[in-house]
Image (cartoon, rainbow, N blue to C red; front, side):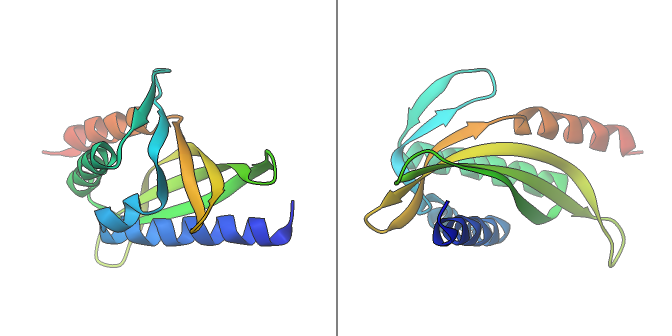
Length: 149
């Protein structure tokens, strides 16, 4: 793989993470090429339009707020060049929540795979393959309820 492609992918997901942390929904959507090919954990494949995607991101960010997420870390764990224009990137996302004044602890981590393609305006996410985040969110919500007095 050409080093500039790998650098571009790392930069893409660093910027993507930053926008997710700030909750800038329109900017998050700008990282994608629509219609987005979305593969859910239950095996269902969807072609998602921008407005549908934004609605899903709003729900996800609301869940993050309820869980008290204070920081999101993203680590590119694997990159497979599929052809001159397409790459499969796997990321491990780690969500942290505050515990005390200056302490953040891991709430959960999950894996997501992305099909990244070269578009006229740079790298865009063309496909999103959810691996295990929905289950992790449900587990974190249950754990939070058990921890409440």
